[in-house]
Length: 186
Image (cartoon, rainbow, N blue to C red; front, side):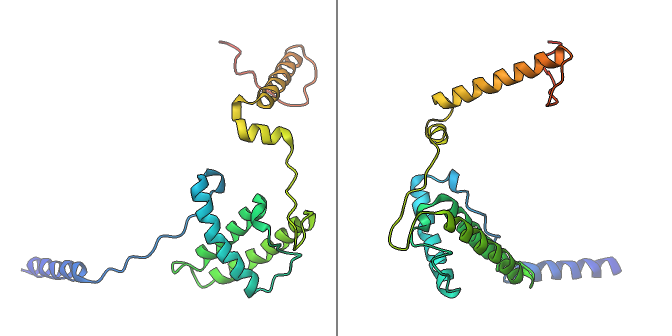
């Protein structure tokens, strides 16, 4: 009899749970991987980021020594501002504890210093953007991937260095780098 009463209570509880208005908690936001975005996604994401950066620039009265109007033409600044926005979205999320906002302010202090340091190295002014200088070898590999001549040349240099280390190790000579020959014994 007592078991029947317990079962009835559990059934009542199950019905009560099923009838409650379950407000789903939103998922924590995911950081943006800028290098994985398509051109279309990149433009959409940059539009959203631009609004946030403008609001932060206004709220914090950030000077041009920290942020220039051409910030979005500098990929390193885009990624830093995006990381700050992602941090903001995460740390102000309803699932975060009360320490989330102070954590954001700590991170944002670091971001402002980092952005100011990068901005200080730019040749841009508030009136003129000067495109960043990108090393030609890196541009070639980034644009052409493994099919680029530069990638092949660097791979050949690595292969030669590996062979030299293997030969030095086999001959009893000193090796500056510990290198294991996994091909031995095949």
